[in-house]
Amino acid sequence: MFIRKENRKVICEQLFKEGVLWAKKNMFLPRHPEIPVPNIEVIKLMQSFKSKKYVAERFNWQPFYWRLTEEGKKILARILELPCQCRAKHLETRS
View (cartoon, rainbow, N blue to C red):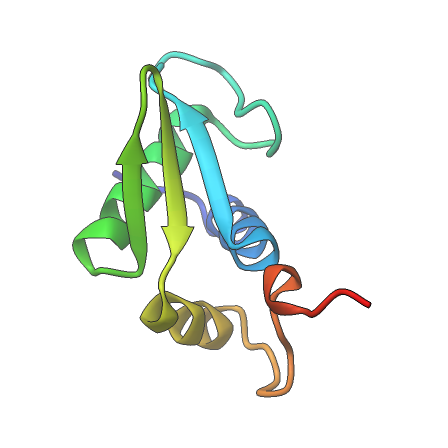
């Protein structure tokens, strides 16, 4: 499926920032509830990342849940052109 570059970047940024992503199993939703992109694009991009082992998938009732893997963190940092010292929000320690 073709996903516009802007939408792909928004999805990747959200995934890297949070470390997790979810989407309802509804291909016809016009927009994802949290990200301003079509829901089907989120699902299809995450299916692609799952096949490359960048994310781990969990399906529970109707939503999909994806968790970023170690390999996925490295690849997303390279895709988003982030500096090496940049860390995802979910990896930061709380004081």
